[in-house]
Image (cartoon, rainbow, N blue to C red; front, side, top):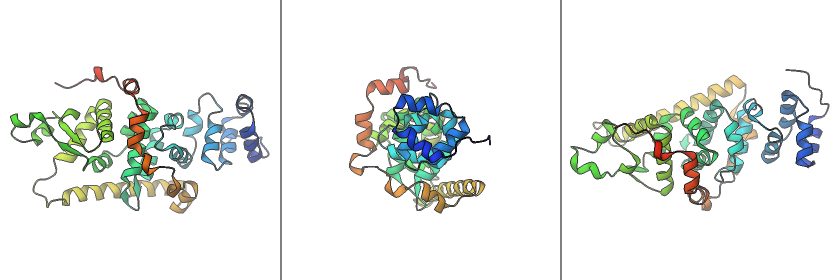
Length: 291
């Protein structure tokens, strides 16, 4: 690391946070990237830390060189509001993948509410962020999340030998699905538009369960395998960085995440995304459908 010229980074951070934004930006940009990171690291409050990142015109390098815990804590502060787009659009695919693993599971079980809010946050953050998240996420995690939320309810069912035929022949589209909520419908439509191959894999994962398996066994087995894989990734990452789950708990307080259950991602989706927003995210008219 290059020599750090700042004698008291903590005091510098406090000074920057009370300055006029324009003046603070000018002063902060006089420091090297290494010095900026040192200043940021002295701030424990996620919102205040976020203010420092935004003092540079493009915070991508700062964000991607920061610990994943910092990025995750800033995202969690805004979870369910759609206001973390700036930070999330700067995060690397590896950081997004790590955050998904850490956010999705609680006590070795999928936290549906928190994960749904995270998926909606990706939608709010923009098309590129949503696609980066999809490409970095474990597809089986999506399978577990959507498993009980989707049913094949196609109008084509009366002209095919069995519903699963649609899945086997890659003929399923969001119009052929019955979703449990409007949010699920929105997520499926956007996933389909963003990555048709992933959508097809998801359909196969959910609807082509081994028919000879004991009812529910194959499903639970797949879910357990997915959770164990995520736990292994987290443990390997912690080992490489020399941190423990206790250290992570000190950096990110999951239990105090500001996610209002009465104004969950469902309401956020309805009020936060308009038809114009959807058109900006994905050009649905130009989706390349395989005839």
